[in-house]
Length: 290
Image 1 (tube, rainbow, N blue to C red):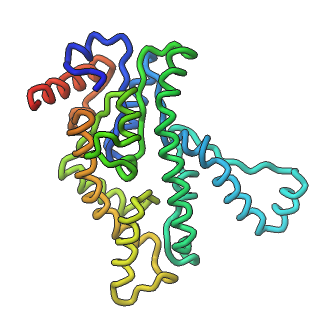
Image 2 (image 1 turned 45 degrees about the horizontal axis):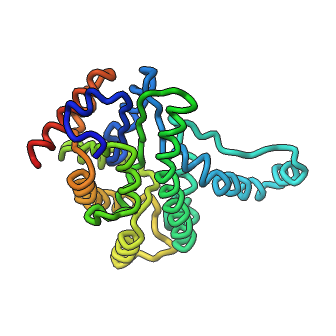
């Protein structure tokens, strides 16, 4: 790891961290807080995905819908209007909307073949965005003169790595540039995430084998058929199982490649000094363990 002890961390002139956790546990909150302090460059993986690697897919999908409306079709064909996504750090909805949910098209769902295709597009985009981390570390320091760097990843990072492989290419590359920090939620946090998701089910990215298993198991229930699946019902049904699937992957990533910080401790961070203390304490706990 870049910092082997609390002292290494506290005395480092250039601090570089990467957050990973389920969405909703404070990755972006703390990233924004540090960025607003003026010393930290905030590299958002989801923003990079939406603007660099999936922007064309997103725009073309919106144009495809617009082409169904004669009035808009004529304007598009004559280059009279422009359609694009307005992605920001605080509004990444164009990415999740494009990713979509599988199921009945009349309820906003995608045929499973199209859903698989978009899942694969997202997987490739996220891996590429993560592999760009080193480039943005250099860019943040050389171009913008930020002393510190924070990489704010999506919840699906664990789906594309093997944390028990000491030569995993993605984790090897990321750990060269950043201290990997798992924001670990409690059982209470998990219950709150499930409650929040039930109220507002959002698209997610899944490991292909996990998705295939969930889809097969869901269709095996009485009365379910691929063309009539309620998209929201499916992603709600899958969410709690996705949490259970991801938790051991996050834990292995932290054990073998980084450190662990409790979500409550991270939520209590108010400024850069608080953050330094939380990370130093987590490094100290790791030193004692090993």
